[in-house]
Image 1: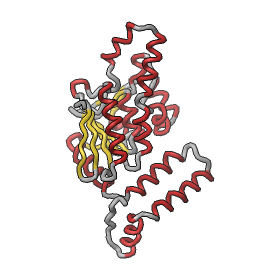
Image 2 (image 1 turned 30 degrees about the vertical axis):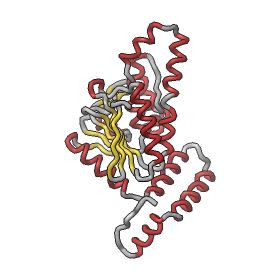
Image 3 (image 1 turned 135 degrees about the horizontal axis):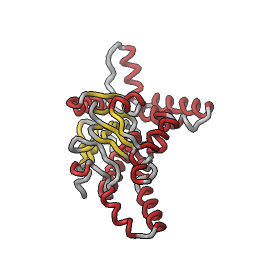
Image 4 (image 1 turned 180 degrees about the vertical axis):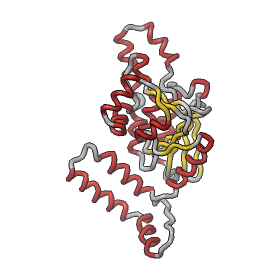
Length: 265
């Protein structure tokens, strides 16, 4: 067990807090292993209906722990290549789980989101950020290229041309620009970030969980699917939803002119 990641579960919401505040929550090996275990547990926990990823100490995440990269300078280039390929691959099970998870995942961003911090943020389904947060896709600064799914999500959100600019120049940009580009769904005052995140998470945790699962699957499949494949997936998704108690509750509440009470079943 490591204190590099803190996990809480309350009222249907699981909160994962990256907890290396002195290092701006730079990703350690202990943290990535703990995140994999936490995501695996949360994915299969039926009581959890929404997930929040955040950082401790006023920052989201400053990317990889570059100070610990020093040891790799002493080994041969081919060994460095093999070591880092393994290191990056070790993230992938967690990234697949975040995408596959049948519940919404929210990134709550304060302070710095740099390098893998942007990759992790964009791997979440939704993102809310403080108006004082700032962003830097900083891989180019150490002569590296993106990992953690950043090269997949960034061009899909901002477009390929803008993604190339962000990645190749590695310039810092502010929350207003992140919001304008669609990297943030919501930008809120720094003093309100925790309350607004909790309000959003609770709203989703009280919603129709299977509906959210189908929506995620549809939206993420749409880029790769043909028109016919997407229409078939829509039919399948609606059918799955229609077989749930929440669908029956939603229709009944509509007919009775009241607010539905969803149970995530």
